[in-house]
Image 1 (cartoon, rainbow, N blue to C red):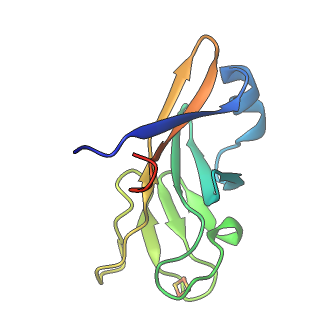
Image 2: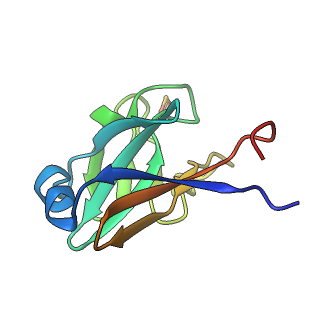
Image 3: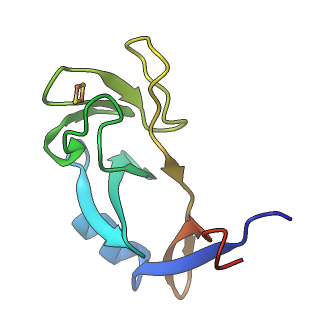
Length: 116
Ligand code: FES
């Protein structure tokens, strides 16, 4: 059975999203117990896990240039579109879909197996 997705409202409007999530500045938030970073690349928004898969550092303090997020600790770099490491290795960030609608901005969180 396909895992169900919970769509959680994170902003009331696209304007609120744009006012809060600024280019090159990761925006941390916690949704259904998952720590997430929102990333803005010009007019497009992405969401990835907040914790670095290399050794657990917070990527909230990382540097982001366009869609490339660099961990502040050992400088591993990740593509926020697909979460893959650009620095080699098999590390990858979990990514989350974002949907902008008239009634708000939503993020998709996969239901845990016990919720489905
Ligand atoms: S903890 Fe992020 S690169 Fe090592």
